[in-house]
Image 1 (cartoon, rainbow, N blue to C red):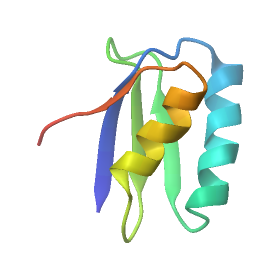
Image 2 (cartoon, rainbow, N blue to C red):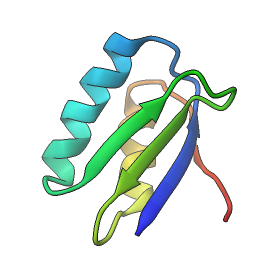
Image 3 (cartoon, rainbow, N blue to C red):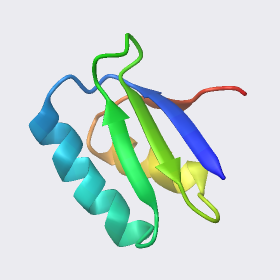
Length: 70
């Protein structure tokens, strides 16, 4: 399954730090950001992804994160 999120992240260093933290929560996931996209896309590919967990992590850091509809 692939979950796609819209974020407000613009800096690579912030994205890299969040990838590190997300991998602690989802250790076997493939995670990447597309900061060139107008929606600053986050993609998480894993067997299962808890959307609320991802949103909570971002919210605690004051970062906008919303799942995109299929």
